[in-house]
Each structure stands twice: as C-alpha cells, then as structure tokens.
Length: 221
Image 1: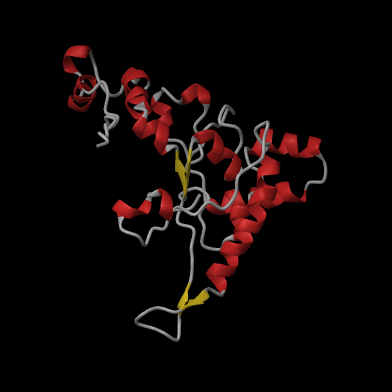
Image 2: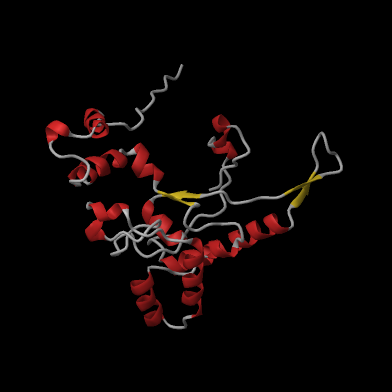
C-alpha cells in the first residue's frame, strides 16, 4: 500500500488514507522475478504520474492544477526489500543493501570501512541481469554480483540504495537495533578496552534493554 507524504503525520497512516494497489495471490510466497511482474504496471503508472502528471480541480484552482507524483521510499522488512529492490538474498555472503559488508565481517572492525554500494552500479548490474536469457545464467550472475533487475530502476529519480529503507519494523519496533548493538557492536574490541572502561554510549544501551514502543490499550465505552 502507499501512504501520502503530503498528509500531516497524524493522518498519514490511517486506514482510510492508505492506497492499496495490489495483493499478491498465494498460496506460496512469490519468487523475486515473479514479484517484478506485479510491480510492472504499478511502476508504469508512477512513471506517467511523474512525467506527465494529472490535472486536479481544487477550490483555489477550479480550472485544475497539475499534480505530479513521486515515490519517496520503499519501506518493508528486509526479505521483501531484497525482492523488491532486486538485491541478492538477505542470507547471501554480501547481506547488506547499503555496503559490501560480508557475513563474516559484520561483527568486526572491518564492518565500518566497507565500500558503499551506489545506485549507478546497482542499475548497471540490474540491466545486465535483465539481458540474460536463461535461469542458470541469472542464478550465477546473482551469486557473483548480488543484483537482479528491478522495475524501480525505470523511475529516473529513484535511488535504489538510499530510497529502499533498511527494515524499520524489525530494527525499531521489535528492538533489533538494540540487539545488533549489544550482540555485535559490543564485541568489537576497538570500542572499549574492558567492561570497566566501556564507552558511555554502550553503557547507556545496557540500561535500555527494551526501547520498542509500548502497546497502547484502547478502552471502548
């Protein structure tokens, strides 16, 4: 579904204001290439809304004003982000959508100095993937380059690296952000010499075991 960023935050995520564009049929989860077929007509509409826009009559402009639409961000969990953004699997050796960190280095000092991925590189690799004609060649390409073709690359303004958000649901609402700091970053020896001389920020994290929002209880009358 789409949320409209022009709306005030308190109205943005109300059910009545969300735009449901499609529901993927079951019973099994769709493969990455299959998802792109469902995205194609949606991206085509977004492309027309960006290039040509639509004329919408308003109170202040009865004859109609030109409205253009842009996709600001793709916000979903990590497995879905990899399928929609056409990155390799989230369990691949190169697991991140933002840099070239590896599974083996994610809890080491080297994780802070990995080269960042770029939109130009992602689009170029995606185009190479699109031109491949058989499943074996595509499978080998993904193993090597961690990239597939995505319909999002058709949008001239969209940055595949910066506009695909890295899993806010698990990181923020389910406290995975705290877990990553406590279980991975606290093992990096460059951050502290001993428990008694630990960085103040890490001490703060230890005191905040659960930073997820508390569920709100609604009383019906």
